[in-house]
Length: 164
Image (tube, rainbow, N blue to C red; front, side, top):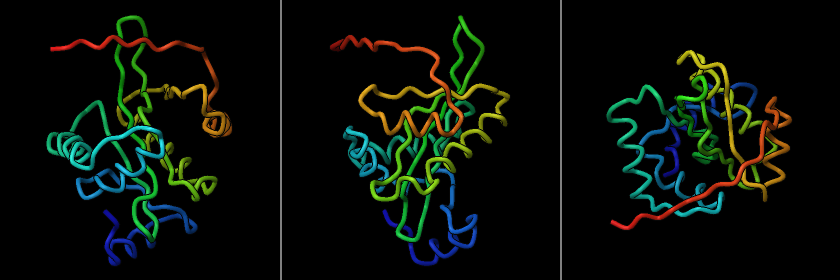
């Protein structure tokens, strides 16, 4: 869904130096977010996205959130982040997904989304922000390295589908 004119004007007045307005994801963002998910190479229907957002926003999670970046023409990026707590390591924040609309990359929108995630993780007393990135995404790797992330390991991902 594209932001209404008045909402975009409000967003514009709230941004720094013509950059995006960053806010918490809302159910009205489902269509725009679903389209951006496709730019990552995945498919989630707008209804599935709306249900995910509704579940997240109807009972605020202490361990997960998502933010969207808005410009005049609506939602142009999103980031999802969660606190991971494992037996073998101290808690850390994990970026589960980050995307900026094609044609708008390189305009500090991704950086602003990461900054919002960093503020959120500090509020949750977490000091490490981690992200995984598919090996076929060298542009994403450059983005993360230019924004202070350092590679720490290379892994393989294994899945097993369990039929019910």
